[in-house]
Amino acid sequence: MTDTVQKPEQATVTIGDGVQATVPEPCILVIFGATGDLAQRKLLPALYALAGEGSLPTGFTILGTGRNESDDQTFRATMKKAVHSYSRIGFHEATWADFEQGLCYEQVDPDLPTAMDTLRERLEQIDQKRGTKGNYLFYLAVPPSGFGPLSEMLGKAGLAQAPGKIRRLIVEKPLGHNLASARALNERLHEAFDEDQIFRIDHYLGKETVQNLMVFRFANGIFEPIWNRQYIDHVQITVAESIGIEGRSAYYEESGALRDIVQNHIMQLVAIIGMEAPSNFASETVRDEKVKLLRAVRPIHPDDVLNHTVRGQYAEGTVNGEYVPGYRSESGVNPLSLRETFVAMKLDIDNWRWADTPFYLRAGKRMPKRATEVAIQFRRVPHSPFSGHSLTPSGVLPPNAIDPDVLTIHIQPDEGITLSINAKVPGRSTTIRTVNMDFAYGSAFSTQSPDAYERLLLDCMLGDATLFAREDEVEEAWRFCTAILDGWRAHPPDKVMTPNYAAGSWGPDEAFQFIERDGRQWHRM
Image 1 (cartoon, rainbow, N blue to C red):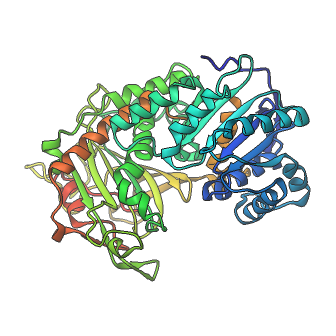
Image 2 (image 1 turned 180 degrees about the vertical axis):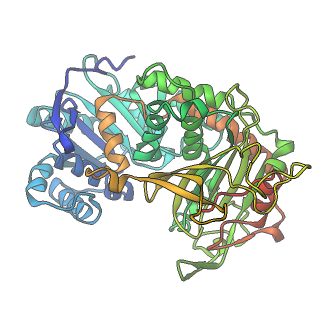
Image 3 (image 1 turned 45 degrees about the horizontal axis):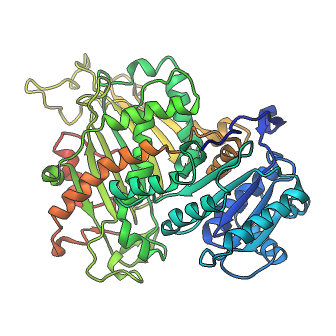
């Protein structure tokens, strides 16, 4: 089984600042679960923005499917409201008038034996009318329990494979709930689709700053030579959310912070920050290097899990001046739930570049603000010639010691990079203070950064898998996280100890004590 049209001849179009962009082959994007939240908030607004800049191919069509009976006009009216509410580029009648001609809806109930026959007939009709040449992308915007069955149904209906045609499958996280389930899901998807046909979306990889990490590392001769254990003391990655579970109690009670954020978003960031330079930027070359890094991550033995991780659950508190209830008081949450809404951990990488340079990771809900940052802290100067700024004979830093240089990559919400260095304060005395050198996307470029889904959906159409997780990437990330889950089950938290941090704080006290044991502190955000 092969996706035989991965790199067809494609046209180009000129977008912002004269940039030449490739336009995909004509195709149909079939969205299972098209009336759901993901489609309305993310997928349709992103596709509309691509249409607005001329990046979609002639005849491009979106076929929304769902269990409920509806029609094209009703679907178009619903999506028009979604674009009005969530589009990055605003709403323009002329753009919409053309875009909506490619919006269709078909009732497809997977429980009915004729469901795939109905879908196939509608696809063939669209091919004839819109000139989409039998090229289909299937987006599973459905609960994870539907991934395997829908993939299997598409395979049995002959829709997964077609020589000379583009056929691809797009799936969202969560991809399993542990290593065994992730492997089982991959095996089931492969019964119908080859690996090079499967696009596993992690929207973090579509963010401009995440993509810029590789450019920053491998296109600037000043940083890559010092991107190693000799010059870097440690790395911190923080994913902080000010929101709670937003009505998703059923999902969150099953997942928690480790599965929801660490296994996918954070482990992808670890891979990009830590990977070796690829020989080129072909998708498989880049993903090979990411997998090598993930395989070098030292597993945390279940018996050591309490020494390497901290769990937390938010209590009531105040976020942005507004009172919010604790996790256990959220609708649908077990009043005695032990599910973690915060996790911090120390990760070690056993390779030549990163040996003895720890990565500290933390993710949590109901933090003081929404922010995702990577902080690269460089080693302190070994000796300071400035009076009062040297190490004591015992190697202990005095209170007025010179701060280390820190490189901070701001991933969201304000995308940019900050380099914190030391400088002399003007005056007769030698007073040293930390100053910042800032780069912000918003002010450096006249072109507005696209939404992550815009880039990822376009790459799916083009067949470029660079920003998508490969089967072995997913399984290596689960290998690390499953060992932690096993350790947590062996060492359940004391019910009295949970919840252990107030909403609006930066997590439990144990998380601060955890990093301070190593003589370090969490980067101030």
